[in-house]
Image (cartoon, rainbow over all chains, first blue to last red):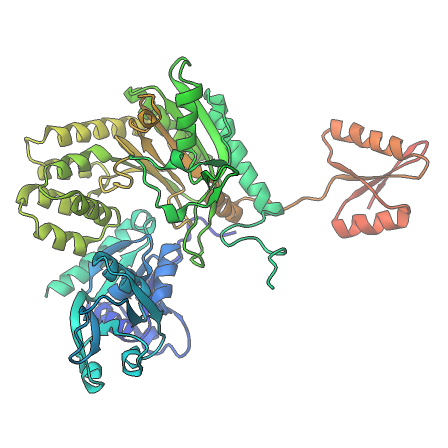
Length: 215
Length: 399
C-alpha cells in the first residue's frame, strides 16, 4: 500500500533526443538542477531539482504516459500530437523544435493536375488523411517508416507528406515542396487530472517557463 | 487460421477475485447510497437501435460505436452510453409517472476506441438520473449524491469540480463566426490548448468577447474565479451573468454539504456543449488519470424522444475507482472459516451442517474429497484453519 501523504514528485515526460536537450536547457535556465539528466547513462527516470523527475520516452509514448496519468506533464512535438491525438491539455508552445509539415514531390511535377487517385507516402498517415479530407480528395496512403523521400523517387508514390526543416534533404534528392501544411513546434502537455490535483506545482513551473520564453 | 478462443477482445477483460471484489464493492456501495436516497434501479438492454444514439444533442462518432445488424437488417449498437437509453425508456414507458423520477443504474457501456492506448472499451458505470425537475434543488441534490459517492471511495483525496456550460455558450453566442469555428474554439478550451486558442481568437474581430474566451481555460480554481470571470464579461451580457450567478450560488451551497474533499470551479468545462444545458460536474481522485465521475444538467435530451423534460445526473466509472481502491483497501480473497467433510454415509448431513455454520455467520465450504488426509492437505494449502468432520457426530479439528 502507498502512503497517502507521500506524493510522488511531479513527473515530466520528455521526447528523447533534440526536444529533450532543448527542454533540459530551458529547465536549467529557470534554475532546475539537471545534472542527473546529463549523467543519465542508460537510466530513463531521472530526478530534476528537488521535487520533479524527468522520464525519457519516444515521442508517441510521451502522449500515452501523460494521457494515462502516469506522467503529469510532457514535452512533445506538435507533429506527434496531430498524428496521435488523445485526451490531454496542451498548455504551452515552447517555441523550440520548430519545423513545418509539407506536401512535397518531384521537382516540376504538377501534383494537382489530372483526375487520377494519388498515392501519398508518409510517416504520418493520420495527418496526411486529414489534410486530403479537407480538400475532399481521395488518396491512397502508404505508411513508410524511414526516409520517405525515397517513395516518389522509386515511383511508389506521387508525393510525400513529411516534416520539412531546412529543405536540404528534399533539394538534394530532386524534390520540392508543393504546399506547406502547418507549422510545428514543441508543446508542453498536461494530464487532465494532474492539472487540477497538482495545480500549484504545475502553474509555478508554467509561470517560470512562460517568463523565460518571454525574455 | 487464427482462432481467438482463448483471449478476450482488446479493451475488455476478465475480472478475477480481488478485481471483481473491488468493482462489485464500489458498485454495491454506490447503489446502496442511491437506493437509500430514493432512487430505483433500472437496467436497459445491452443492444439498442442505432437511432437511439443518433441525436442532435449528443454526437457519438459512428466509428466509436460497436455496431451489428439484426435479422431484419436494422442497424444496432452495443450501448455506448446509459443516459440515452434511460431517456428513451422514460419518454416512452414512464411518461405518466409522477415527477420527479429518480433512477439509478449500474451497467457497462462500450466504446470502440483506438487500440493499444491503455484504455478500456468496456466501461462499467454506476450512476443516477433525476428527471422532471428544473429546480435548483435538483442540481444540489445531484451534487450532494456526487459528493457522497466521492466520499465513499476508499482511495486518496478526491475533488469535485463544477462548471456551467451556459457561461461559455453566452460568450460564444456573441462571437461572429461560423459553427465549425465555434466547435473548434470549444474543443481548444476543453483541452486547454492555450497556444492554438490564442491564434484562433486573434483572427476573430471581436476584441471583448474573444478576450474573455481566451481566458476561459484559465478560469479554474476557487472563489476567485467568479471575480475574474465578472471582469471579463461585458456588463451587458446578462446571459453570462445569470449563468455565473447560478454557479456561484450552487458552489456556495455545495460547500455547505459536508464533503471531506475540495470543491473547485472550472469555467473551461465545456465538453458536450450541445448536450449539457446548465451545471456540469466532474469528480477526480488521486492516482487516476481521468475523471472518475462526470455529469450535469441536460434539459434537452428527453425532448429528442418526444417528452420535453428537464433532467440532471452523473455516472461514476467504477472500474477506475476499483483499481484505485485496490491500493488502499484489502480485497484479497480470504479462505473460508471452516471446511466440512462428511464420510460417504453422511454427505447430506455434512451439507446440512454447512447451513448451520453459515447461519452462525461462518463461511464454510464442503470438502469434495473421499479421504480425510486429502481434506487436511487441501485445507493447509488453502489456509483453512478448521475442519469439521461429520459422521454420526461432528468433530471439530483446528489446524
